[in-house]
Amino acid sequence: MQDYEESLSFLGTWGPFQKRVFYLLGLAIIPSGYNLLCVIFLLAAPPHHCSIPHHSNLSHDWIQASIPVQQVAGRPERSSCSRYELDQVQNLSASGTTLGLDLTHNLSSPQVLLSSLTQEGCRDGWTYSTEHYQSTVVSEFNLVCSDQWKQPLTSVFYFLGGLLGCFVSGQISDRFGRKPVLFGAIVGLSIFSSALAFASSWPVFVVLFFMLGLGQLTCYIVVFVLGSEILMGPTRVIFSSLCLPWAYVFGELMLPVTSYLLRNWRHLSLAMAVPGLACVPLWWLIPESPRWLVSRGRVQEAELLLRSAALQNRVEAPHVIFFTAKVEKPTSEKAESATFLDLLRTPNIRHITLILWFIWFSNNVCYFGLSFNMSSLYGNPFLNYSLLTAVELPAFAACWLAARRLPRRQSYVCFVLLGALALLLIQLTLNSQPVLTLILVLVGKFGLLAGTGVLYTYTSELSPTVIRTTAMSTCAMFSRVGSSVSPYLLQLAVFNQFLPWIVVGALSLLSVVICVFLPETFRQPLPDTIQQVAVPQRFRWPWASTLPPKEGWKSAEDTTAAPEVICTTCL
Image 1 (tube, rainbow, N blue to C red):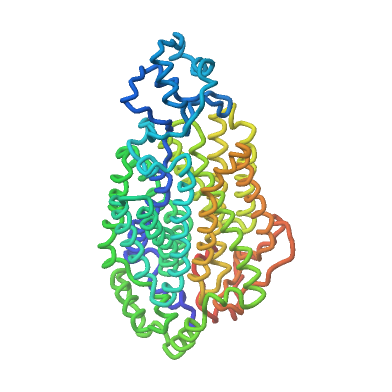
Image 2: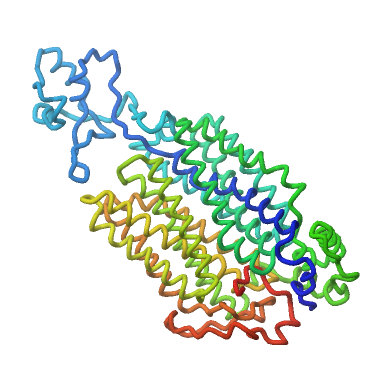
């Protein structure tokens, strides 16, 4: 097959056409980033305790004394799910029993007088703190105490929606095009986030939340592939490794600010629809991938698009860009024959696919586990999540620098190992040093995110062109399985408060160990067909990798074979 990028060399790498695609795709990714952490703020669980009805005729001191005091992490806190029997408390109050003058200063004082009383559940509902949130899904539908199990289950449905979206969208994108899937996901985000604001019950909210999850990660995957297939050379490297993640993080940073300003989950749901609606006009500005058009045998459409790009760049296109006889039939046959099952068909690609699936799973368990565990840290939740998101900016910058100079395995191992060690050290500071604990969490997030950035490039380089979007989507699907597990990490704190952090750190270490069995792709010829997938190596220390020379590393046979794949990081 004619070399695709050699055929497009007349366009250059940074003309008006490339600039337009570069910036517009950066805008198109913002709705996806904006919706990523919505599960954190919509399902926030404010501090709460049993409600004491006004008709009980109890004084303020007796109302405060009606709630038992428990020791939580060495500190006294009012019980969230029980109170002393209201009839008995009313009898004590009516009999003239006094509580002591230090009640308002010492929470444990009434415990001495009332500890013998029988406790009961919150029969009259709950009173929720409004310090940080006026209303959340948890406080409106009372997903606490006996219904507390609904909190993580709601998050699971959101991530399962993402899992299904990744599985379906990858195959649809490979068959029908990148652009329809991208804007279908963007419109879906706006429609279902708006519908959330009108959910009348928890079951309705869960169904709509599942539908919202369908488009969240799909949007990112398709933008990543679309930009990587349209852009070429250093522009593609900067886009996929740095600018696209930064635009995504910008969308993430908008959500804590919006949540801080609105404080009501229904208003926040409506606000989540705005970025997607603003991106709808981009349909008429963002082109379809010409590389995908060629792979489907639609050469005339690809040439028409590229001639339009040449006019924008003020360069002259050759009379014939692609040789139809050499391109159309072979590529269309490969596009039709490649399916999801091909990821497991041959030993080489099966070995690589299974390892990648586990690494993506563990990375997302750790990523979202960190986000959910932030609720157990002290301080302003909006500030904590803003810091946790802002640390992604230097993480992706480090990923970009590593992509230019370092082997993929070595980069991934170093970054994730740093994050794992920081997370394992949290158990030494969790109760005594809150500031140091927050710093360790941020270092852990930095390492995991930088490793994830490397993993996107590494996965795309390991995957053959004919099934790349499907391979990326199946990896994203397993990442959503990990995301679905992550809400339950907090439940492990019931057995030991350090256990969630230990699990996150241990999973990170395990992903480092199995990564060394993947073949290196840095400065290597990249596969176009399943038969060209690299042979997995036996165990070898990542830092012992031997780099091929910078010049002349691609053989003549490789040069005249299939088009060079996306996400090349050899400048």
